Amino acid sequence: MAAPKGEARWSGETYVSEKRVNPGWTPTAEMRRENPDLPAYVPGGHPRNPLGVRAMYLGKSLYRIHGTDAPWSIGQSVSHGCIRMFNQDVADLYQRVSIGTPVSVTW
View 1 (cartoon, rainbow, N blue to C red):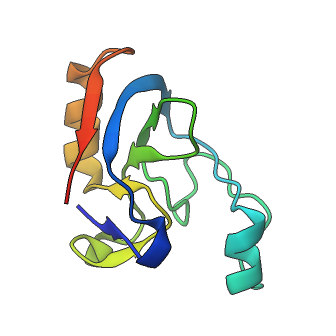
View 2: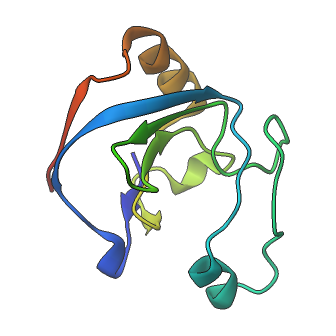
């Protein structure tokens, strides 16, 4: 899994509030300030979509457990608070997790 960088690192108890197959991605204003070259939106299923093939949304936050278009980033502190997994692993987890499943994030 890729870890959040800097101040994006968080921990706590939450739950899976939503699940999406091939989710679209809209970077936050902060992400676009950090990297003005980011597109305003990347459609689901696009090979450059940083959310990968599946996403599980956490509580009422913008945080997700999701796949990635950058498998070399797994294990690095690169995300903005989300938890990245290899696409094949997040697809497997997605099938086994229900909405409402408790999630505990620790470091």
